[in-house]
Image (cartoon, rainbow, N blue to C red; front, side, top):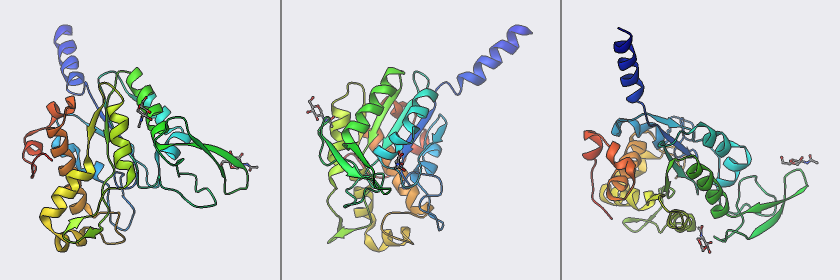
Length: 254
Ligand SMILES: *[C@@H]1O[C@H](CO)[C@@H](O)[C@H](O)[C@H]1NC(C)=O
Ligand SMILES: *[C@@H]1O[C@H](CO)[C@@H](O)[C@H](O)[C@H]1NC(C)=O
């Protein structure tokens, strides 16, 4: 009897031996940018065989997610073998003369810094996107997590019949993954662009009710499907946790 209890306990825990954690901004977060929009992280779980914890928060950048201690909390939560998807860029751009608390130092150097004036008038030293991302990756890898760096999603901005060219944070994200053994890269920008280009602007525009960044659930689902396609085409161990619905998402490898 004891043995049977122990075995069934083992099986039920075993079913959740791994968890997928997600770190990102409003394009991934529960509730998206408000007004009925939602982040794509809310639509990923239906395509996987293991649970998803969506720790994305609206308005955050690689820097502010770091400064608020969120990567530290995430790193202390993960167990060896868990997966962590990190996707930033929408809020990482330069903010002008007064620091907005989330811009990064320009460029992809791991050592360059910029001294900025905070909103309250004091000065602070900030680092690059790559610095903050690298720091997070280093901590997560030390915990034994399988890290996936994902490039930011496109905005609903078109050049002719195609989604416009990627911003610099897409290349930066690729570099972070490339510089870290065992860290996978999903070019989410390219996979969403592929899906959107196929659908066409007249089908994609209605996904965006408030601005060119935040999707309704229908759009967030397309963005989640595009991530799964990129995952299946790439080298992450998480692709082994994609279920039948995930294997059936549209489009091919780019
Ligand atoms: C200014 O804001 C920063 C960041 O929130 C804070 O660390 C610092 O203590 C503040 N300085 C003053 C003088 O209020
Ligand atoms: C990748 O590593 C190279 C060489 O160490 C470094 O110059 C570059 O800044 C790194 N880039 C990123 C994005 O980590």
